[in-house]
Length: 318
Image 1 (cartoon, rainbow, N blue to C red):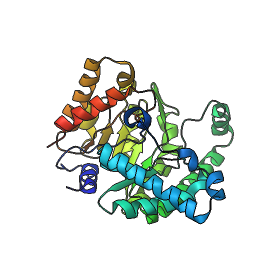
Image 2 (cartoon, rainbow, N blue to C red):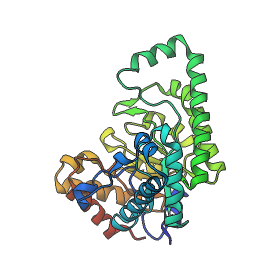
Image 3 (cartoon, helix red, strand yellow):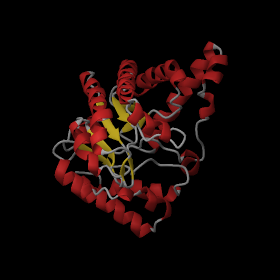
Image 4 (cartoon, one colour):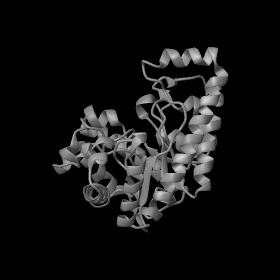
């Protein structure tokens, strides 16, 4: 199978030739490979000051770097389009996506951010958001609709450039549960998440819904919003891939569940146990994509990530 056939087969809950893998982000280039791309070059300020030849050179170098990193060095089945998510860079990122698509061809999936729903507010915005729920609920709904519509239009432009997988990365949950009640979630997030996913499907693209934390109080709504897959099935919040696969594996594909906390601070035996658990309960009957329970983040010991990939290679074939 091609990488794209393998990845999309898993998203469609079919059994590919082997378990595919990818990460939403990979932040260990220096630690594992001794070099990384200078992402400071991908800034509006820098790109605006470049001449046409230098501008084209930077975007081509980024595309060549990421194609080599993700397809050759890491053997991922989907390329995450790493780089700043600044809206001011949309024109530049669209051009980069076109260059990368031409470089890798049509047999590889390319992933990009596509969410437009409310997520956990940061500390500076939490009180304001809570007050708005009480004092201006209609305004909250109006903003939710605007955010979703903006995401849909943006996703269309990225799909036209070559993106075929959209990661919906608004985080909804703490380890204790969602940041709003399930009832509130059903009003201010679920309808708009469903609309975004519906439009992604209409374009012939795929949707992976990501959120960390304990998703169990809202998992029925997450599944009913009709994504192709759920990511990250956070074991640090008590999300059990065995249970989720048993209950929902016939409706949605699953991504992740390798415990990031153990990858960073656990013993080798604990890491192997987490990996084995994911493969044992995620792999059967297809519909599983192997990855961490968050991202391959800076600070994670590189030897642990290498060990994770090596165990995957030994057990990935169907």
